[in-house]
Amino acid sequence: MAGTYAAVDLGASSGRVMVARVGAGELTLREAHRFPNEPVRVAGTLHWDVLGLYREVLAGLRAAGACDGVGIDSWAVDYGLLDEDGALIGNPVHYRDGRTDGVLERVVAEVGAETLYGVSGLQFLPFNTVYQLLSSPLPPQARTLLMVPDLLAYWLTGATGAEVTNASTTGLYDVRAGAWAYPLIERLGLPPSLFPPLRPAGSAVGTLRADVAAGTGLPSSLPVTAVGSHDTASAVFAVPAADERFGYVSCGTWSLAGVELTAPVLSVESRAAGFTNEVGVDGTIRYLRNIMGLWLLQESLRAWGETASSLSSLLAAAAEAPPFAALVDPGDQEFLPPGDMPARIAAHCERTGQRPPAGRAETVRCILESLALGHRAAIREASRLSGRAVDVVHIVGGGARNALLCRLTADACGLPVVAGPVEATAIGNALVQARADGYDDDPRDLVRRTQELVTYEPRGDETAWDRAAARIGLP
Ligand code: ADP
Ligand code: LRH
View (cartoon, helix red, strand yellow):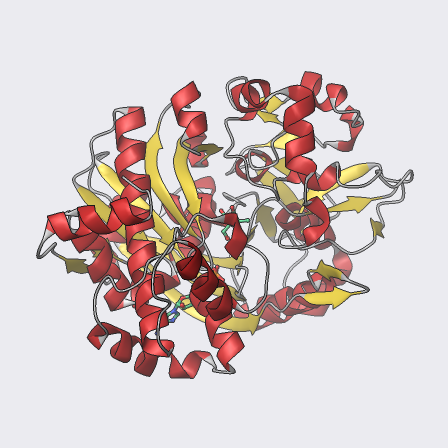
C-alpha cells in the first residue's frame, strides 16, 4: 500500500512543503512550495517571523493538494508561549539573539555542569531553550510552552503536546528517564505545568481544524502526525546507511556531525568534548556536535552582497585557491551571531597568528576546509567516546550539493563520504508518517535504493590534514 504525505520542513534559511509518495520500493519527492525564512529584528531583538511562516505553511498545504497526512519539523530549541486561552504571547525569539549572553555561565555556576549534563546530556550551547527561558522573567500569563513545530501543529489542529526529539533539545528533558526533568525544572524556578505532555515521533497530533481545512482545501479528517519534529532527527532517520557503522553530517545552516547510538554517553570526557545526546526517532540517541556549518558561507555571501546564485562560481574559485592557507575553529561561538562574517574570520586568523584570507575565494576555501576539519573531529571523537566504529560518513541536507565540501570532508576523515539525499529532512518526516500509516519496510533501505547518492572516496595526504587539524587545536 502506498501513501502520499505532506512534509513541512522549516530550516533556518528556508522552509518547504514537500509531497512524498511512499510505498513498497517507492519513494518520490515533489516540492509543492519553498519560501525564505528571514528573521526580523524588532527593537533590538531578533525574532522569527512565525506568523509569516505559518502563512507559507498554509500556502504549501494548499499547493500540496490531496494527501494522506501532514507532518511538521523545524530547527530546534525555539518556542512560543501560550496564555490560558491558547493565544500566543509575544513573538518567538531567534536562537541567535543576544538575550542569552551570560545566562549559560550563570546557570552552570548555580546548578553545576555535571548536574545539567547528567540530566539532559546536551552540549552546552548558549541558546538551549533552558537558557532562553531563564534570560528574563517568564511572562506571568504564560501557561504552555510549545516548541516551534508543536506551535504550528497546534494552529493546524488545536491540539497541544511536546514531541520528544525536539523536547530533548530544551535542556529540561531527562534523557535517561525519557521524561521532562521536573526536579531540574523546579530547581530552576520554572513552573512544571508550562511543559505539555510528551508525545513520541509517530504518534497522532490530531486532525485539521475546520477553518484550516476550509482555507487549504484539504479535508478536516486529514491526520497531522508528530514526526521527528527536530529537523536533525528527521534528517538522521533518512540517512541511507546500510548498517550501524556510520557517521553523519546533517549539513545545512548548521553541520550536525556524529554517530547514532542506542544509549546516551554522559561521561565527564563527553561533556568536556562538547557532545550532545539528542533523542532520535525510535528512541535512538543522536550523539553529535554542533558545528557552525554553512552559516559561515551564508553570512559571508550576505556581507558581500552576493546571492545564492553566485555560489557555484565562488565554489569553483575556492577549489582553485591554495590549500590550508588559513583555518578557523568552526565550533567557536564567536561565529554564532549575525554580522560581518568575513571580518570575523579575518580577525580570528590574525588572533591565531595566521595571514587572513585574501579575497573571497580564499575566504570560501578557509570556511570549507575548516568545516571539513570540524566534521572530522566530531566524527572521530564521537566514535572514540561512544565506541561506535565508523566506516563511512553520510552527508545529508543542502551541503550534500557542495561537491567541494563533500570531497574535503572525505579527504579530512580518510573515509568515503556518501552525499545525499539533499532533502533528507523532508524524507525522514514523510517516512515517519508512512510508518504511522502502516508502511513497515526498512526506511533507510528504501532511501538507499531510491535516492540519488554520490560517493567521494578519500584521496591524498592524511598527514597534511593532521597538521591542519593541529593548527586549530582539533584532533
Ligand atoms: P537549512 O535547512 O538549515 O535551512 P539546507 O539544508 O536547506 O539548510 O541547506 C542550505 C545550504 O545548502 C545553503 O546555505 C548552501 O550553502 C547549500 N546549498 C544549497 N544549494 C546548493 C548548491 N546548488 N550548491 C552548493 N551548495 C548549495
Ligand atoms: C538545525 C538545528 C540544530 C540545532 C539548531 C538550533 O536546523 O535544528 O540541530 O542545534 O538548529
